[in-house]
Length: 512
Image (cartoon, rainbow, N blue to C red; front, side, top):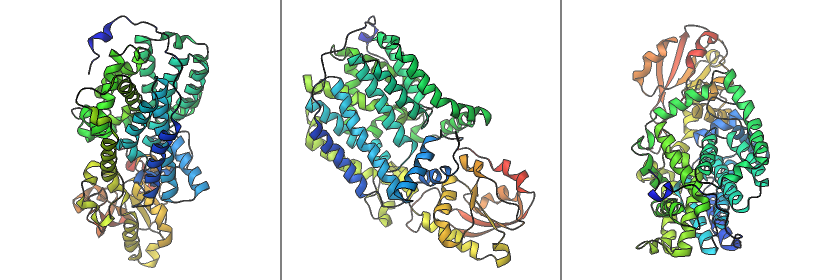
């Protein structure tokens, strides 16, 4: 994508418009509350996402970093389970709260751009029916916090441009410190916002004395994680390469189309309109830096095989820009219906049907949801998974059972056994996947290993490198015919370990 021709006009530092309109708290909170109520109503359906199972365990192994993420979310997960209880509802309630907060921040962004009641409500509604925002509001993930913090950073930047209150730079520094400890990708957003301000202004906000303090706050918070990465050979870079190699979201050809799907077919026109109007509207001229930031990030993430949702932190601001223009000048010709309550009600129903666990789990495989929101499939079957591993464990003779170890192919499986294995009397599970590899290697007991995966019995040669006797004795079945990552995996009993774990464990290390 490229900026319209008018964007090429010389950059001018323009003073911000008049004071912001009153905040339409009642309708905005009504929209936010409706989203929160829906998310809480389904918070206990299905089960944990594999990432949530991983975060539970990672939080008990606090570190300044992990190979696949900074430290904040595992620590938050540990705090949630300590305060609210070790349940899927507790984690999902916090995710719902983040989504509700995002709705409010989105509306505040519209207000800072000069939007009144209608613009604020339209922005809030667009956020609330956005499939990506709703999906991340159901499960606690790095994306859940990243999108809220990124949206907050952009709102603070917009407010800074309007008010020129340099104290907001300290708030941006604090929000950036948190965001960088959730995802290092936040650095790209910060760089894009700064670049946008340098290109089109107002540049004076980058010359304020407190900017240095804001940078120091963010850098100080980021430093321990970077030192951990450096001390461990920068695994985050290897992780980034692994993610870039995954051809999900259609790869580079699908980067732009999937933004339309992730934001929702209905709300998409509004952020596109907002992007266009940042270059065309005189009233939005002070906020043109947002358009530049969005276009720059598209170029960067297309070049680096990034994911379309990496831009989610800017969507609320673009919705806000579009909403402000709709309020001032009306919707573009032929799109007036798209800014109405009935249209958004239909969009809300479609989003819920495609992203949230509203179907009986036995019927989920027969719905379009798994194809649209693959994460929903990853929340089903963990207790049955644990029961099958336990069944295999009980087939071992008592003397072998006492010395058996359990190895899983990914962190979600190991996390599920950690969560549910106790009631089956299972020993601790180990995995070489991502951060789980750092949580410790199996003990050298001399007993057999119960191994989950590879994906089929054809993967036996990959196991015979480590054991002399490899036999498939079980199979994972979620019981509802859902084709997720675990479905159909064989469970093996492996004997005759070829070397002690001190020698084998480094070979189990895997990033994906």
